[in-house]
Image: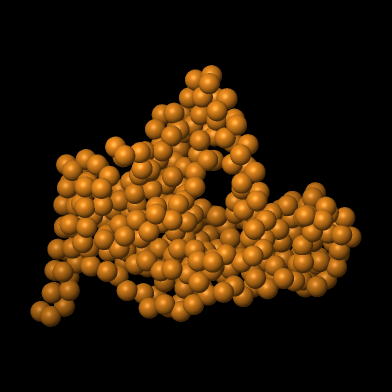
Amino acid sequence: MGLNIREIVSRKDLDVAELKGKVVCVDAFNVLYQFLSTIRQADGTPLRDDNGNITSHLSGIFYRNLSLLSEGVKMVYVFDGEPPRLKEKIHEVRGNLRNAAKEKYEKARMGEDLDEMKRYSSQLIRLEDEMIEESKELLQALGICVIQAPSEGEAEASYLSRKEGIYGVVSQDYDSLIFGAPVLIRNLTVSRKKRTPSGYIEVKPEKIILSDFLSELNINQDQLISLAILVGTDYNPKGIPRIGQKKALKIVQEFKTPEKIFESVKDKINELPEKDKFDWEVIFSLLRAPKTKDFDIKFPQIDFEKIKEILVERHQFSEERVNNQIDKLVGLKKTKNQKSLNKWF
């Protein structure tokens, strides 16, 4: 679901050309779900091959990442590992939402309402193990580094982004900021146009610089984590009722330290239904020091035959279209090799 702090976050437009030659860590599950929910047919159903296998995520990985590779962006896709037990709450919430969406989708389907079918079908998606493994396979064939996080992918990506040589984290969610990512990049892998009731609007990449964000709000990292817990995280999805983003900001600014912040709302937490109650100290520690691991960032060689085998042979992608895109990759590889060669002359 992701942290909801949209109203208080300051953003800056990002020109993709700024990322040329830079390394970014991609929150893999977040981006793959974006591909699955947005790359769809007119009735909202995902793209499928002749055998009924979903291919929306493979299409997104291939076409949208190729565009970024052409811009000189170097990507490290970080996949989720074993989630903390506390995340069971958000899985339950998501399951309930999925069930509700399924009922609404069936109603829309019976009424042949394509707009409503498309609206609710995106909420039915699941990322299966086979889809995850094949995604990794295609990413590596494209020359993109793949990392398996020990726990939360977003936490690992944020941790790696604090290392020298990595620019920031790519995700649609704001959670990376809680995990301390210096730069969060949004809208990088989504379509450049978004459909709205009034027509299509342009969607521009944007960046959020953590240090600027904290400075503008006059808070520190511990206060940001406290604010997140007040409004609701994946570990306490409901947060505290009647405490929204702006009210939470006032509370953390007034009481300063986590201990005093949560002492001020102790009664409200105690009044929550038993299933929604939470231990703020446990959640705070998970967000402040999540389980992470050091990795050597290594980019594999582009494997053209593997790309064609996955897309064309397994999933019946258009061979002509895939070959056209591969020609671009060949050009990129030649350019890269030529630059390496020029260093010796």
